[in-house]
Each structure stands twice: as structure tokens, then as C-alpha cells.
Length: 229
Image (cartoon, rainbow, N blue to C red; front, top):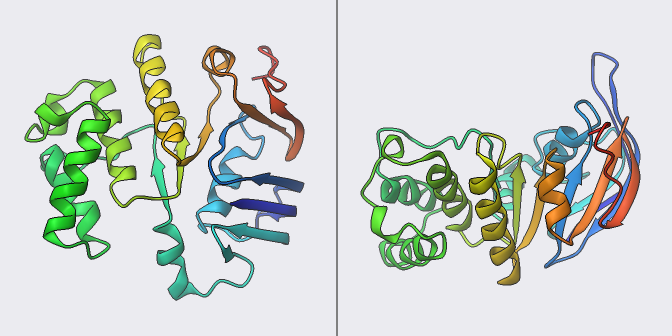
């Protein structure tokens, strides 16, 4: 569960990024977070991943109180989530399999756990036959599927996808969103940050719209003004 309770965030340069955000994302939900550039979306992600701390308010993420979390606890909190980026961030010189092994070794997984889990996630994302390929041998859509697999290998309870379709054409974008929907149906909480109105419109999911540091709408279908976003 993720819970923001009257969260404010100001930066040292005087920017007031969030102005009293309150929202709750329950286990198993699929949520779109939308809003124009500079609205506060990135700050919300930074707070959830503990890259930044709230200026005021209470923040709970997967059982951790991020107001009082100790630095040594942050890596354990981050293991409860997987993050997917727009630019993939794969290790170019390693094969797909090796990229996933790297992510699992980082958390101390055993060789047996690595073999079993990687086989499962590659099957899930439809890349079982391409485990030995390097990222530069794959299409953009396939590379994003690898990024999703990497986010899943350590069995997180939450997936955060930050503009996951920003570099993809409409067909590949739809395929990625359908994959994230499938992952959600298997029980993983999914939070997708996006500005792509057509994708949001195609999926009947909860939409949290943020503008100027405040939530302006929260509901299925949500507020999504094409001219604004």
C-alpha cells in the first residue's frame, strides 16, 4: 500500500512541487498518474522511491514509514518495488539473461532462484527465445519488455512505470500497456506515469490527475483534458 497524507514538497531553489497531496493506492490496484510537465508527477515518484523526502505530511510505502525510515532500511524498502524507465537503462554489453541475473544477484538470490525466476519472467514478457540476445539486437518494444522483466525478477509488490511507452510507436505502446495490465491481474500493484491520453482512454483504470502540485481529479476514467496534458 502507498499512502500520501497531506504531503508537501519544496526544493532548496524555492520550487513548491507538491501542495497538500493526499491519496491511497491499495495492494493490487492499477493506477495512471497524469498531468502536464512540471505538475509534480516526478516528485511523487521520487518520494515513493525515497530519492527525496517530504517537507511536510506523512508517507507510507509497503509498510515503511518514509518520514522515519533509516538510511540502511531504504534498500530493503526499494526491493519491494520494481521501476521501469522510458529509456530502458539496460546494460548494453550483457545479454538479456545476464541483465536479469545482475538484478537478482544484487539482492543475494541463489543460483536456483535465479534460474527459476528468470525463466518465469521471460516467459511472462514473451522473450523466452531471446535470452541470449544483447539489447542492441532487440527492437524498442522488446527492450522495454526486458526492462519490465528486470523490474519483475525480484518479485516486487509494486511496479512503477515512468513514461514506459514514451519511446515507442502506438502499436508497441499498446502491447506494453496490455502486458502491464496482465502483470496487475496476477496480483502486482501497478502505477503508470504517462502523458499519453489515448492509452489512458483505452483502459478503464483509476486515473489520478495532478496539476500545479495538487490532485485535481481521482477516479476511473478520471479527468484528462487533451489540451492540458
